[in-house]
Length: 293
Image (cartoon, rainbow, N blue to C red; front, side, top):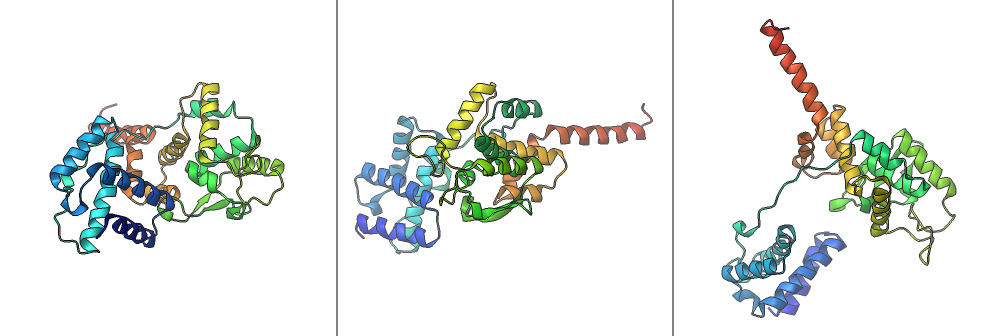
């Protein structure tokens, strides 16, 4: 099979599997880089070739996470060739080739940091965007894509359409987040644009704000407040606060749109208040059994 035809067919294959356009674009980009580097027939790629490519990526000082993304793209391509196109060859990527990654705990804001941050957010649009991240656990991409038709203010809920993994989910809006959203909608320009959050200035005024546009606003407020924060930290904060309030892990998983409970369980390691309460309750019972004051 010619390499060009193979790539075209593979792109159609993953598109039929309902991969997001973002994922397809990334897969094609990283696969193209590999094809240009290898400069050999694809069926002649060996384990040694892949190891040399990993060394090449390391020499470019790419992070282990980025290198693993490259390997995922190449692995998927060869899975397709071997299992779908029936190309007779040995799979060039062994399971052990994936680079080990650090697993830092999710970072979250303490209550005083939340107050410090929101004290400097006086723009109604920005306050509403970041309140939805803090109270509803929305990802920055989900805020950027949010449409007016997805809002159900009477029921205090909204629909996240095609979140990560192309999954829809219902999330609920707290009273303070609802008030921030209503305050913004009252001053939002009347337009045919369906996106909730619009650019307020410049040549793109009136168009939906981009992911990068939202991130820049967060960077601005982080500098202004002196709080080291990102949009994703607000989502982490919401999960940690719910866990500290004894919400079930399955409930938090559903609200955040996690595919695996293992992802949600990472918040247990940073939920210090819950651990502290459980410890004192348990140790108190132990001491009582032993007749200790």
